[in-house]
Image 1 (tube, rainbow, N blue to C red):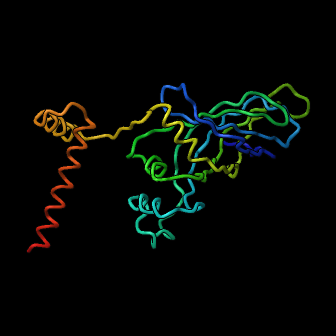
Image 2: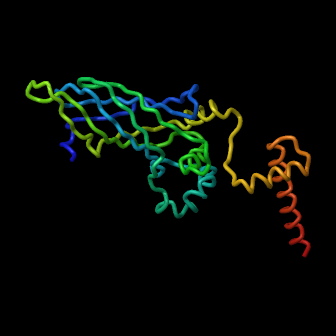
Image 3: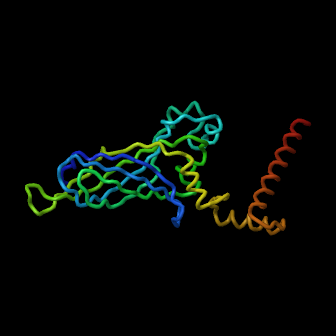
Length: 230
C-alpha cells in the first residue's frame, strides 16, 4: 500500500555529459534535488523515465528528409510528432537535508532498431528536447522527534526538462565507435553478405558494402537509361 506523496520535492538537470571510459555508451545526468520539508532525507530510491519531445524542436530540410522513416511526410508531422520514451534508469540517492546533487547514468545504444537512436542519428546541430519523469520512494526520519522512519512516494508529476546538445550525444558515440558504427542483421542476411564477399575476393566489410552500393547504382542508372531509350 502506498503512503502519502512527498511534499516539496523539485528536480532540475544541471548538466549532461558523455562518459568516455564506460563499457557501453553512457551519458550522465547531473541532477539537483531540492526538498521543501524540514525533514532529514535518509535515502531516495529514485526511478527515472527519459522521454524525447520531438515536437519542441525545429528541423532543417536535411533533418526532415532523414526523419521521414520515423514520422512520415512533413505535412503529417502535426499528428505523428509525439513524445516517445528513450530509456528508463534508476539510482539510490544518499541522505541529505534541503538539497543535494546526484549523478544518474543514462545508458545509450548505437542500435538503429531503437527509435531513440534512429532519431538522434538523423539530427544535425542544435539540441534534443528531453524530459526526465521521476518516481520512487523517499525514506526520512519520522516526525515528532521520534527515531523511526517515514516512507513517502515521489509525486508522479515530478519532472525536469533539459535541452541536450546533439554534440554531447555524438561525442559519446565517438568515444565508443570512433569513425565507425554497426547495424544488426539477420543470420541469413549476414551469411549472404559473407558469401558475396568471398566470391568477389573483397578484403573488408566496408569494401563489401561499398561494392554492393556501387552495383545497385549501376543497375539503377542502366534501368533509367533503358526507360529513356524505350
